[in-house]
Image 1 (cartoon, rainbow, N blue to C red):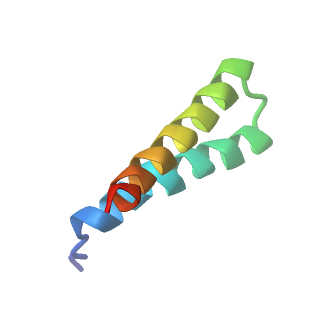
Image 2 (image 1 turned 90 degrees about the horizontal axis):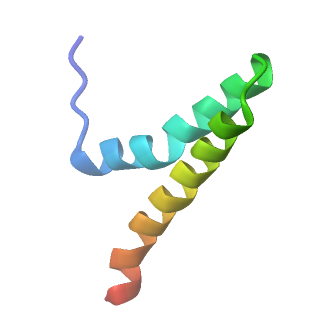
Image 3 (image 1 turned 90 degrees about the vertical axis):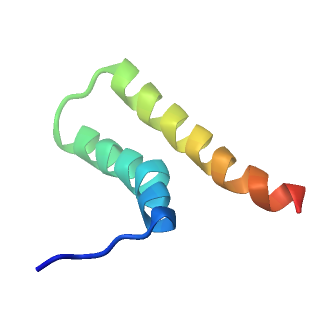
Length: 57
């Protein structure tokens, strides 16, 4: 079955859910420090990018 995903839902997935899934995967496997750091930076930058347009209004 085809699921229609809007642009806003895709942005939220790429900026919040994907890095959180990487962090959860890091709990299961032995991660590198850089993998965890990259996921946290990705999450921080993504949340900042979602906040900036709202703050300008």
